Image: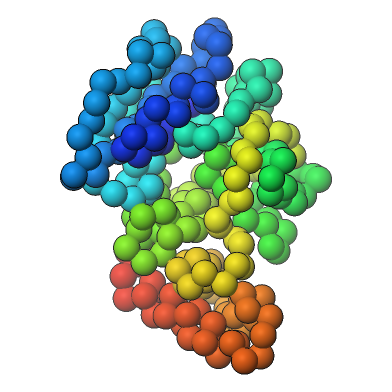
Length: 268
């Protein structure tokens, strides 16, 4: 099986993609989706990206979810790994991704772990089907690998969510998960570290940023149909401020996110 690493980058951040590449490895290639804003003047492609195992495709516009979708639509590897332009891969760890898909022939999508020296993330220590994911578990896009034939043309990142989206600037990976599971795809988590990422993850973090709070609230609305959503809204508002004087302001942001997704969401 072949592994293709789908790297999304934006405007002049293309210059940093070279740092993500590993030395050439058998059956591992890269597809770089270079998103360019309308006012961006593209220069010469960095020579280091002109390797035989690197393909660069471009897309015009703004929004990480659209960029991810562009990469997925051009993918050709048997297994694809979602990536950003600021990661550090360890060759033998990446190669193990293919081993997992080969040993689990019914596996459609897998999620893994990343390590960070700046903002460590807590993970469950055991493997599980994401249909039975523990409460509080949240994804980061760079943890996701998928069997291309299972996903391509069937599941997409929702453009309402993610960096540079109009309102909800995170949460795209968790909505992607919901869509994949609703379509019957088999998705398991494996407690195995595949990459180093020395930046904090946006999704799942209650830091009080209104757009992020709105995104989490929108995800809660989509994910929890068991009647627990209202209590989760209240908990989200409290965790995002920890201040009684600001609680109702934060709850207002929560309900803005819910109202926005009710009005605009169309299932993928």
